[in-house]
Length: 274
Image (cartoon, rainbow, N blue to C red; front, side, top):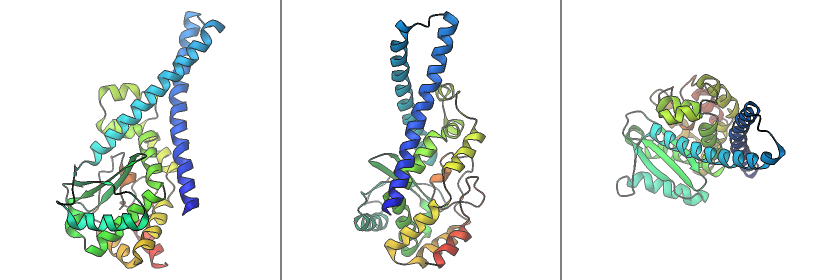
């Protein structure tokens, strides 16, 4: 688990650095073109221009990440819940978090009949668990515990942080296409098209992450049949809008979701071997 945690942490750090470098590089290219056109390139203005590009690039990066975080949560939806409103959910989640050493996440309940949950670690110290009303009402105690444990495993291994950053950096054009404002579209003109962004996102999100989370989750519950039951039961009633940029953050993936995730049958087969 420690090696896996280091791997995901390194991938997350690389995404942040690349996102910053890309924004700074584009601004630097624009500044260079303007300098050539105005014939104002000189050693006297080189250092101040470079400092300005770095500053503006950093500010743009922070702004885009903040906007991307809001777009993700707007897309996922839901309202923040409490222990008083959902005692069964919070009791299970509290027990799993205590046994794994993970802080209790912010819990949101989505008013939807579909059966699924999304994990978004958009900030280093804040994890959002968004669970559909359908999953809460249709899952048994064992099934819900299994899905929660596998999702908490994504947090403890840093996979949730890596996947969330991949969605908000590489997948930014997908988020903007879905819910972005005019300002968002202007500020992301220099990014890839949504279709190319999806291809890059698929390459970034290795298909072993579901297997790793499932394996770690049943390591907590000590009961693989619980997760097998949940995946088989909800495989065909967990559909999320395929146009959503947040699709990789959902626990139960639809077949052929466009991101190369393993099919439910393959995840179940792997669990049966444990």
